[in-house]
Length: 188
Image 1 (tube, rainbow, N blue to C red):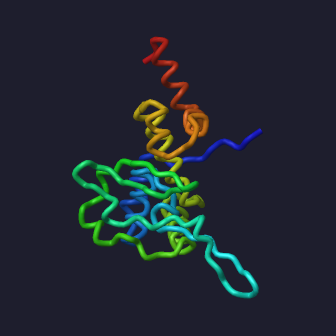
Image 2 (cartoon, one colour):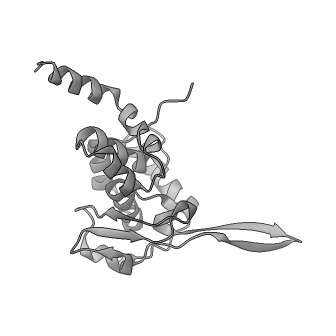
């Protein structure tokens, strides 16, 4: 049996952002939760490997960091040309993403550093350890269960190849589903 998917609520996210003093981390969190971006889509990723004692880079797995030219504040969109698996998509930009944040893109922080900063913040503010990826889960949960967007729409925004993958967010928050079923049957 698979473990239940964990997510962060909108209220927890807002609390984290309000307590965050680190500008790079704040921007990254807004992009993670508010746009559903993976950490690799925010700061970039390129796999390293050693070959004959020299470090080499695998260009086939390269994901470029998010740059300001990919963010359109007027249309509220982020264009991701090369995401996981070489896919492209368009994601929404959060209203919390301020125009002045564009000057900070691309973020110049290492993956592990960003994760460690997020981990420290969640322990301090929420009293629990969380992975940065939980922000993406929070976006999926919020869009599917709270905002009631069609699952195919959320699939496109998150870049999932299958609706079944996005469907885990419908199961991620059983309390919300039970409350909706209760209201549908006339409960108040």
